[in-house]
Structure formats: structure tokens, C-alpha cells
Image (cartoon, rainbow over all chains, first blue to last red; front, top):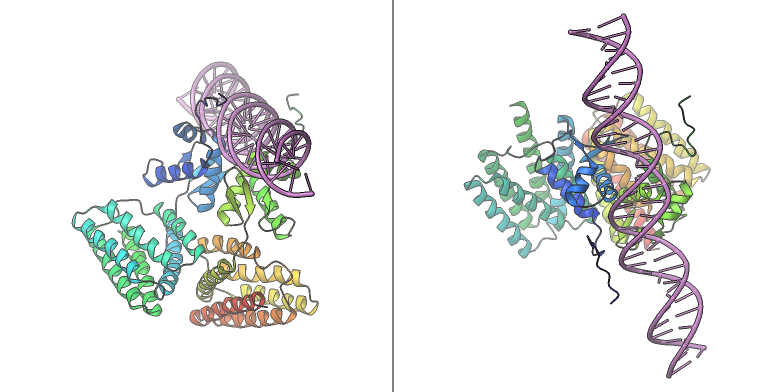
Length: 223
Length: 223
DNA sequence: TTTCGTAAGTGTGTTGACACTTTTTAGTCG
DNA sequence: CGACTAAAAAGTGTCAACACACTTACGAAA
């Protein structure tokens, strides 16, 4: 018998770094680590049962994504987004989502439309139940699907990072029933535009949606 | 006397990771590491006189940027871009550069225009000397400046990563005199459009430039 | 009481070592 | 000579430990 019992054995089929990264993202999204707060490597490491090495690698990744920022000899901090940065993000997302709509429209098929339709209906349910968390997740899904149907690998990679970065700003609970209703009305418009296959129409619809989101954000900022 | 002589002392005022990252990027850009080739951590570490830890962190960063990709138990490889991925990148850059032009036009001032003009003139010099390397650097500069003048922090962050990723595909030496001349004619159009302050005009000019670049790339691919 | 300097404590940045996996090499058999 | 097998080498993934930087707490002097 050659096999040796490994104490806390890692199966060595998958690096721990992505898992750690996802976990830290979750901690931030759930607000368990506040914006501006220091991320202590040892704490994360112990929490996940790994050493600091992989944790640091994950933190570097999150730094590049924009969720953390590193300060020499002080470690990693959860980034906090200024109002301008949040608005910049909206402008950027508007462009990219518009591009996604334009590219997706001629490529989309009935099956995909049906999939989006399901998400749309589910969002209406979430609204009627005032389930903002579910609405947020479905909303993210909807956008991600549209982006994927544009079939541009780099756009598909970048999009989620912008979404999660924006999460730093619009902490949960910002959705009101009215804003969710407006948002989903726009989703309906996007759906129809995509189904029509008209690129310009779809681009207008997708751009408009993010533009309206920016307005909603501004209303939240200014009271 | 309390001060202790540190043997191979790093001053601990700046993390070594960014430096390592830049160095690996340089190695890739200079073609000292070919596309698809494995990046051996120990080699890089010894080359730069550091240990593998920081090297791994730098590699993770470059993975996120898209220059490297990691394979479990095999390490990091220099990514090689498929033709579709390169074209996807052009589509994405076209959108973002168009956005940059639109936003920069109303914000730009005479001083910045003059700066761009200098770069433009220098590029004409480089063309007449058939100095493709200098042209490439100036070209990158020109684009980067336009992007910065758009004053969108995230766009400014993302742009260089897309440029360096594209470098993986269009390895140096792809510039012909004719293509450089065409490219700089388009720069002239961009300059004038920006100087006019008209967002739509500037967006058209900047988008057109990347679109033409895509055509030039396609010509290179197909012979 | 306040302020400054000093010392303990906390935490990062980096390193070297170990376990495991993949690759290469060497050797054997057909 | 070629193919298969086994051992050695190379290289990654992770960890534990060290040295330094920063922070905080404590105490003495003004």
C-alpha cells in the first residue's frame, strides 16, 4: 500500500485561487466586509483553511478587477467608489451594453429569446413579491445573457467585472418597486428589439436601459 | 549603532509585483517568450532576483489582463490569440475608442490638441524613416492620450490592457509604409474632429480609425 | 494633563521548503 | 530498431517562517 493519508488533502485538480477569489467577492457583495475596510490576509486564509499565498494571488486578481486596492506595507483594502467613478462606470456600461445589443440582435434565435423571456417573467414575479435580492440576481442574469449572445469573447469577460465593481457603490436595498418596474419595462423593450433582429433598434434599447439606470442612480444620490 | 546592514536589501517602499509584471510584459512584447510558450516561474524569479511568490502574483495579474493563461499543475502559458479573438478585440476597441472620441471632443483644450499634433508629426517622421517600432510606440501614445482626455477612469484603465493583448496577435513588423501612412491620415482626421469639439464627428473619426485597422489586419491575415 | 519617545503587538512582503504532478530520460523487452 | 515501462528530473501549488513596516499602548518628562 503506497498511498499515504494526506491530512488536509487538496485533490490538486483545481487551483484554490478562483475559489478564494469568489469567496472574497461574496464577502464584499454581502457587505460582510465594508467598503474602505482592510482585508486581512490571515483572516481570509484561516477562514478558508488555506495559507496566505493563494489568498494574496486572489487579492491581486481582485485588485486588477477593481474590487480591491493595495497599499504598500498595509495590504489590501476594499475599494470605495466615488460618485464620479460610479457615473463613469455607467457611461462605459452603456456603450458596452449598446454594443452587446447591436451584435446580439442579428445572432439571437428563438430559444435564446425564450430564455430571456423566462428571466423577464421571473423578474416580474420578484417585483410582485418585492424580492429585491432575487430581482438583482435575475437582472444580472438578463444582462449577462444579452452580452453573451453578442458573441464577443472579450466583452463577455469584461462585463461581469464592471457589474461587480458597480456593486461597490449601489449597495443592496437600493431597489424600490417603482424602479424595478421601470427597469423591467425596459427589459421588455430590449427583448422585443432583439427579437426583431434589428441591430440599431436593439442598440438603442440596450443603451437606453443603462442610461435610465444612471438616472435612477443619480436620483438615489441626490435624494 | 542600531542600523543593520541588509544583504540583498529591498527598500520596502514599493512592491516588486508591478515591476515583475512589467518585465514579463516586456519579455512577451519583445518576443523573447513566444506565444503559447510556457512561462517558468523559477526562471523569471531568478532572472529578476526574487522568489516565486511575487512572480506568481504578477502572473495572476497578467492572466486577468489576458496575456497569460493558467493550466492546473502546468503553470502559466503565453496566450495566443485566434483570428476571431483578434477581430473581437477590434470590435471592442472600436466601440471604446469611439466612446473616447465622443467624450474627449467637448473636453479637449488647445494644449492637449497641440500635444496630439506633436505626436502626429513625430509619426510622420517615423514613417519617412520607416521606423516601425517608433511608429508603433507613438501610435500607442496617441490612442492613449485620446482615451485619457475622455476622462473616464475605467476606460483609461481598460484601454491599455486591450492594446497589449492585441500585441499578442499582430506581432511587430506588420506595419508597411502604406499602412502607416493610411493610419496617420486617419489620425489627422481624428485630430481635426477633436479640435472642432463636435462629439458626433469625433466619434465617427475614432470609430472609423479602428474599423480601418481591422480591415488592415484582415488584409494581413488573408495575404 | 498633555506630549513625546519607546516598546510591544499586529500584519504585510518575501522567502525557502515540501508535496505532488507532469515531463523527460533511461532501460528493457518485443 | 521501436515501443513500453519505470525511474529520475523538472516544475507547479501550497505552506510555514522570517524580516521589516506600521500601529498601538505605555510611561516618563514638561
